[in-house]
Length: 362
Image (cartoon, rainbow, N blue to C red; front, side, top):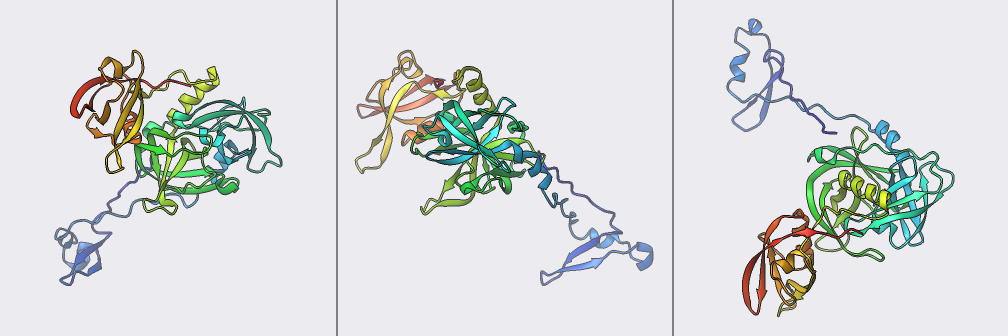
C-alpha cells in the first residue's frame, strides 16, 4: 500500500515559530495571539520560511498485518536445504524460488504453528525468472495470500519481509521499498543456474538465507514481491546490509499461473537476441565482450547478419563486457524491440539493428 503522508500547517497564532539567530542556533518562540502582545503574530513568521509540521507517523505495530499474512507463508524443506513459499490458492499450489526447489521433486512444507509438516510435489519450475510452483498433497488449512499490484509500489513504501530465515519459522523483518524496476543477476548455485531478473524490487527489509521464496508484504497485508536475494558486498565477506531484492508479484503470479495451467511457461515476456553466447577475455585476462558461439535459426541475430565469431560489445548503448551485462541489457527490453547492437568482427567495429525475439519458455 502507498503510505500517504500529510503535511499539516496550523494557524500562525497557534504554532511555534523558529527563528535562526546570528550564531546559527534555532531559537523557539511560542507565538501568541496578536492582541496579547500588541505585535502581529505573523510579523516574525514572514521573516523566515514556514516550518512544516512533522509527517504523520506510521502505525506503532504491524502485528495485525503479520497475523493476516503468516498463515499464507510456508517453510519449505528439501534434502539440500530450506526456504520459504507463498500459498497461491486452495488447491495447495505454492509459489517459491527455483533455487529453493533446486533439483528436488518432493518437499516438506509447514505453516508456522503447524505441529507437523505435510508433503508436496513439484508442479514446474522456470529458472530464468527464478520461480517454481509446488503443490501440497493435503491443502486443508492452507490460506491463500492476498496479492497486490506490484506496478503501483514506489520507493518509500513500508514493506515487511515474512519467511523462514535460517529455519526460524514465521520471522518478520521491516523496511521500505528502496527502488523499483531493477535488473539484477543471481549467481549460479547447486541445482540452479545464474539468472537475470527484470523489474526486481529493491528493499531495505533484511533478507537472509531461508527468506527466499517468502512474501514481501505491503502495510495493508498484500503480497507485492517474492524475496529472492541479498546484495553481496563489493569488498567480499558477506551480504551488503539493507540491500535486498524481490521478484515483483505481478511477474510471479503470471509465471506461476502458466506453470499451474500447463506445467511449463508458454510466454516468458522476456527479450532474447537469438544467439548462444559466452564471455570473451581480452589480452589482459579481463572480460572484453560477449562472443557469439552460434545463432538461432530464424532468430533476431541471424536476421541481422550476426554470425559465430562476432563479439558483441554493446546493446542499445549499454556496454556488454560479459554475458551478465548482456542479460541485464536484454532484461530492460521487450520482445519485438529494435536495438542497436555493436559488434567487433575481424578487428573492425560495426553496428547493426536487431529485432529482439522472445526468450523460450520452459
